[in-house]
Amino acid sequence: METPCSLSASYEGSFAYYTVKDRLPQILTKVIDTIHRNKKKFFEEYGKEGVEAEKKAISIFSKLRNEMQTNKPILPLTDNCQDTDIWNQYLDYQKTLLGNGEDPSWFRSPWLYVECYLYRRIQEGMSFSPPISEYDVFRDVKNESFFQSQQAMMALCTHLQELKKTIASLSKEQRQEEFYRLLQVSLWGNKCDLSISGGQDNSQKSSILASLESLKSFILVNNMDSLWNTLTKGKDVGSENALKTRVDIVLDNAGFELVTDFILADAILFFNLATEVHFHGKCIPWFVSDTTKHDFDWTIQQFLAVNHKWMSKCGQTWKENLKKGSWVYHENLFWTLPHEFWSMEKIAPDLYTELKKSDLIFFKGDLNYRKLTGDRKWDFTVPFSQALKTFHPAPLCSIRTLKADIQVGLQAGIGERLSASDANWMVSGKYGVIQFS
Image (cartoon, rainbow, N blue to C red; front, side, top):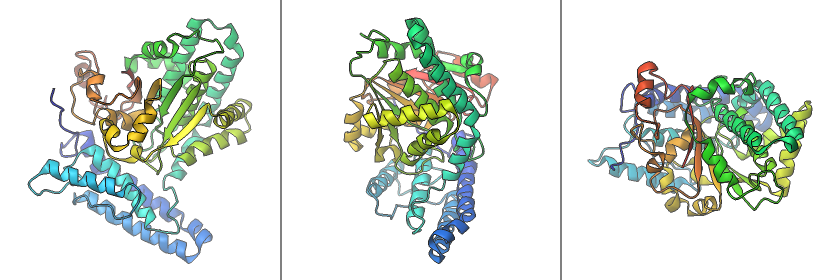
């Protein structure tokens, strides 16, 4: 079957068009505002140099915003980082796709590419603005979103600790049911995405556990049984002597979603469904709220410091897990490249080899889904495994709420029915999938 064309802002009225026209300039405006708001902090830390750097960064990003809004050609990167050559080779590759001497540009090139490129250019702009180069322009909104979601986090931690107390009395079926609940919590946690809300408050204010039942009908593909079977194959659930089993979670957003992933990972070990959980985060600030190593460590620190019995208990467990190696954190440049995952084996063979060691990989969120499926105009009914093309390092599962106009693996007629009743069903975050291959 032919691989369909890439989603792109060249399709007026599409979500990609709206993103490049409105959302991305909005995000950049917020970045400029944030840097300006921190002028005093930069002055206190670095004196006059800090103020000069603030001016320089603002001028770089104002120019970038203008390039985007006037559909200028995509420029090569010039910052001499580890990945600069890979990005510039990718730009050359995009030129070959256009042919006839045309240059890739914001509204003509694939949406996945230009959106990733924006965040890489933000990174480049900061690197050209020492001494504030290490400053994460999204940290303030990420932290704020975390604190706004604390009530919901407390409810989750309390639920988990109560569960741990009763675990011995739970039957296999009850354990399965509890695992499914935490999978759904991790799914709906993906709604808290700051790049979709343009950096506006998108925190989880109330306990998500109470609404799981009413949200069930919004899960369009629900392969939880396949996950359970994969994790329990040949195991006596609940027995202590589990064979060495590894689950990987390719993370998406920091804040509330990251906490739902921690809770799921905690339960996976606690239920003896695996002996180790490996997390994969981003090496640079990415898509506003994506998890970096700093966010990962900071979140655990916050849990340890908070004045709430069950939250700090969770924090202690998570710190212990990292110390004894049953939780492992990884970074790889590949996660912040514009490439579809089917090119991972060629571009980042080390990462592909690492993922092959897994018994099950969870890919959280929308961007991962877009990269898994190549961000293309697939028919709704194309099987997920087919859209993955050659990418299959291990059994894998996408857990996402829909916030981009792409979805595969639906039963015939469902996509059309939803389109007729709700024009925004693919981008509102109202629907979700737990989709296994």
